[in-house]
Image (cartoon, rainbow, N blue to C red; front, side, top):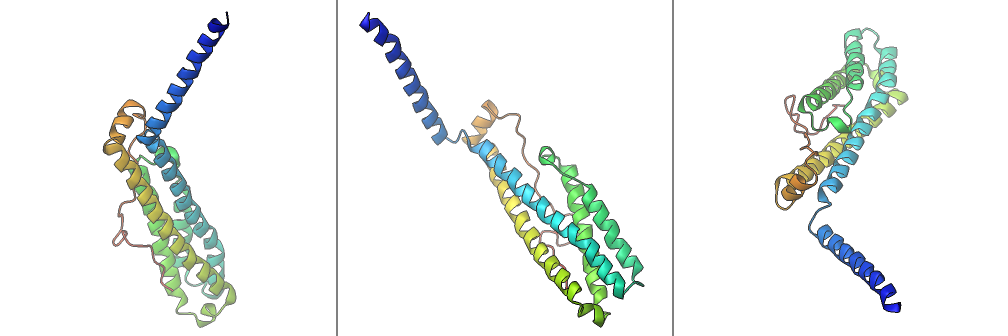
Length: 205
């Protein structure tokens, strides 16, 4: 009776040991790379959106400050407001990162806001009192810092997408993709939609 009891337990032990050994070997073969890199892409995209939202949040106060000293620049002020509205209306969630049309729309809207803000900063050069206003200077500094953060976040996203897409298209990731992750598509990356769009967005101060 004793041997009968030990037999099934010993068999279960070896089965568990074999499964653990197999899991260890598979983890070393990159079986988890694709979902891991996919999560990194999503996290990087969240940072891109976070920094663009930070910029959008600065725009209303900036417009109001400029309006107080340069109300006659209505065309430029309106262009900034409209560009902000369009930029914030286009949302790209995680499920749309493989949609090139949606990504292009998003990037074009953000580029238009960058351009409108550049024109607004150029207008400020004509108003010395505005340029010396402490609130304007603070907003100007925050906007400049945000543009730098956007550039960094975009760079990190581009690198994360490149790593993920490369894994899917090369050995052994290509095998794991065909066997286990065939529903996970290649991710769309940033593409140039305006002249010099491959460079970091710049707002002239």
